[in-house]
Figure 1 (cartoon, protein in one colour):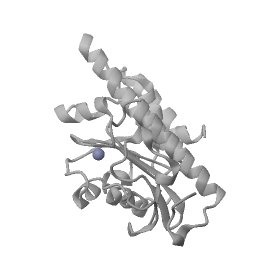
Figure 2 (cartoon, protein in one colour):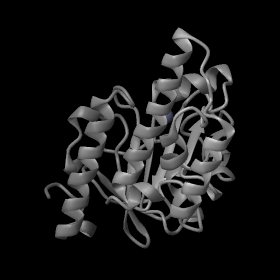
Figure 3 (cartoon, protein in one colour):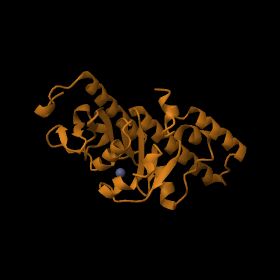
Figure 4 (tube, rainbow, N blue to C red):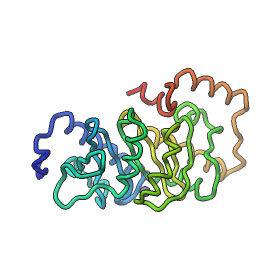
Length: 239
Ligand SMILES: [Zn+2]
């Protein structure tokens, strides 16, 4: 690592690995159009009170491992390249770590189809494809709040108590996981579900799965889910 501040000049192998994996996740987010330009941000737990987080204002396909910033639990910068500031959504990330100590990574993105549903006020379409039930857990829609504000962080407080997938009304998504890949898998699933529903709606009247099939999916999910926050548990079993 180069150009890091003196307080953090010894970077361990596991931190280098974490940085590289975070860059790969953000490249996936950008490649798949799940956030555009410099939008979207990602953090991961480094130690119990240290986090790596993406900087503000960097075009995400150009993000490099050295660009990631180390912050403490109060959002203070511990180490980072000169001239870079943490994402303006730092409070959103810290809100999650504070409320859910088991969480290891937080991803905020702007998935177009899932966000479009919140713009027109369509409830999230859980009942149309099985992977919504099996792979997402509950999807909660948080009320709109201005990006980059404390209000936005507070808007998800209730939702993240029991869900790992939150749609921020008129704005984007928040996916949280014990591991980094979980955050991306949940984001891909929530967007895929929304996109499939919108495609169906474009050509006809979407038909929900029959009630007995939904009950079957509900039972399946309960069998595989962890006691706290069922969302994402099936993803974590593959990691
Ligand atoms: Zn945003």
